Image (cartoon, rainbow, N blue to C red; front, side, top):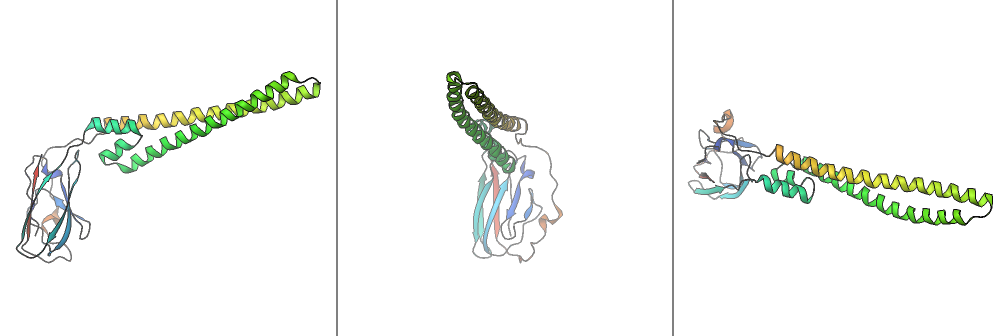
Length: 222
């Protein structure tokens, strides 16, 4: 069995996960040991506002006692903000919100890609426009003047479109960074105190796992 012991006022927020079936075993303090068979297990402790602690345990035989000291590193709001400044979404990855993190990263990457494409297109079309404008100034006949003017006007419109694409891309990228920083600041995971409810299944034997006398003691320290 796994016997879970915690020394923390916030221990009720921990989730103990067993990789045998991937389902949560309950929250601390558990009312009774969890019955397991000898074998290999992955135990995971999670506390809001901290990096998760993961340990690979091998229970060799009944009667074996395994003692693991879980030391969780607290998350830092400053680190989340700094990561968000490096690239949008990195702060959300740091605090454990990967979906939002990837979405913000995609927005900034897409915005920067669009801005780069717009800038390259703007430079090329500006050079073409300057050449067409010179041709317009040097045209002699009325037909040549009209043709050069029309071509220069079309190229100028394309140049404006490229400039608009560049500016829009920069705005999207900057907006992704701003949203990520605001989210990291306002929704930073803080530790909550108080007595937590214990799930009814926490003390029940796991499905498919026979009772054993193996004990694993977890001591939560900060």
